[in-house]
Length: 116
Ligand SMILES: [Fe+2]
Image (cartoon, helix red, strand yellow):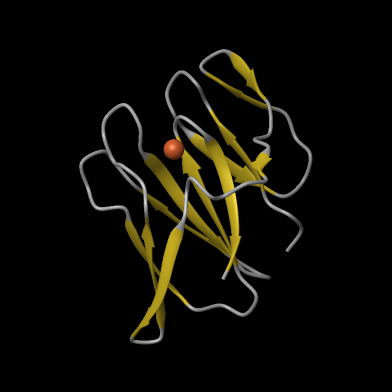
């Protein structure tokens, strides 16, 4: 799969994902593709294997003001996305895929990419 592109609406927090170039409008605003943060040190993850799945713990607060709002796991032919909400545990579980990339979106700090 080509490199995924993510958009998040600042008004309604809606997320859209694709791989090509396209125009996205939401709540009357034109959205720009999210840039991937280069440095992950303040948004670290722990990955373990549970029943042949990746069990991913995100070391991040989950308050109403500051939380991870989605995790997308991207393989060569599919994207799996889990929405997360404030006050829940910052944990996601995905079936293992060969050479998958994980993307996390923090509502305060933006998009992060991990190879798992
Ligand atoms: Fe954050």
